Length: 438
Image: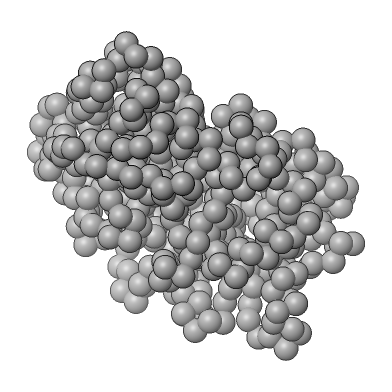
């Protein structure tokens, strides 16, 4: 379904109060420096009553954004040299766009992820030094979609969701919580010579599709994996761990069939995890920056009898990231950087194949109420980062929405797998085509 939009205005929203001189140099942390040089796209869809005019909505959002930027001043700045953000109140580009033909219900009932990119302020493959962009999309029915492009070089997903929640609180005149900007003191920036960042292949080779997994079927999957993992880790796998293991086994089974036993490629799974709770004194949710670490495992088990292999290994890797590890990680950055360099070199040569899982489950996605109710749907768009799967809670918490980015031939292997298809649940008005929801 094609989404045709027309940009009708553009302005720059600056902080309502000037940023003090001593705060105008926001130092990036070591983990910020390691983050992908990419925008992360989020979309918030709201079905509004006719009592709100689009002009009122736009003014309301810009005024509250301006107020929020006094607290989140780095988002009004510009990223410089992968070292710091210049916080001179340059502002956030704010676009207004009219959706020409479709209603909001058309888009959220049967959306196309690539078409959702038209609701974003920037093209995702055109990274600039701007930290944040916003696009307010106006539907004929009165509904709106707020599209955000957030620079991963400045912060992670939880930071941005917390910012939007704070922005919404400001819009309602409620109390807001000031972010904590101590990331660079916890993980001081380093000399990054020789590290060229996360390899992002040509995006036109990658397709992004969404699938919704039914909560009851995920629970059944957890039960299947639980017995083997409980014996060795004393833990029952989470929803995300169980689903990740299932998808990894499907990915590896297809790779083994294609590559054969003579392949010299190394296949690894990466599980992105939040670090805020892993310190001696856990960091608050409103800690701003990139606070994540990749738990990496290299499982080769794809047999049904050994289906708990990945879950067990991922749980073991996650358990290693404890308070003792965090202290060592803060001091031993060079070892980690060397490890990342070697991985990037192998990936560039085609010797390393990585499947990355990132979970936004239990993040405050649906808490952004700007005064007209919580969003009907919060989604990502088409990021097109190869071999990546992102998980998000459904609005009712009764399942998991997932965003798959693969080469087209690899995507087809999932879509043709009968066990994979059995886990997918149609939602809303979509009954016949389980892929149509996303």
